[in-house]
Picture 1 (cartoon, helix red, strand yellow):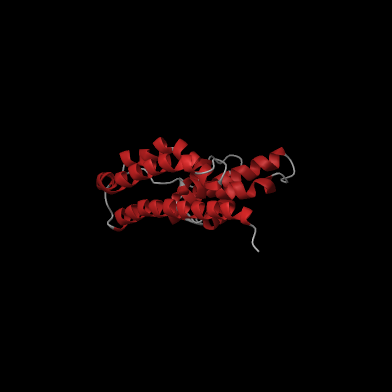
Picture 2 (spheres, helix red, strand yellow):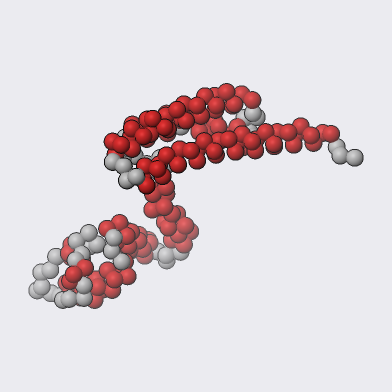
Length: 191
């Protein structure tokens, strides 16, 4: 015979799941609007107008839903914590409606720093502070290559081949030319 003490717990789980599904559905609606703007290659002004027309009502309704739903859930439950967190940041979230250049999320920034975050523990074993500083410089240069659309391997091979000629006594070559932002792919491997 099943224990009746677990029934309220199961009810809370079902309720939390249905609330989470509703929230995800609304968030997906916002992303569909962004995808629509991307597919139509809208300008920043057009994107802003589209957001105002389609996303603002969704966000307003979602804000009201959070306000009404939070008192009905346990504050320490996952859905309670998610609503509290989202509601505390809501005014900042709505800023993307004001400017078509703003992204709906910070995925680009998160993806840019992910390699550093994943490698953080490895950097503890660089050997010493100087080696760690050199590793940071190399990571920055490789990230700069990615940022300006250069193949890091080609850039690194070319720079390593040219570097001895830049460091000869009596020769005055500007090392700045070798930085990813100034590196000329047309002169690749030409000395």
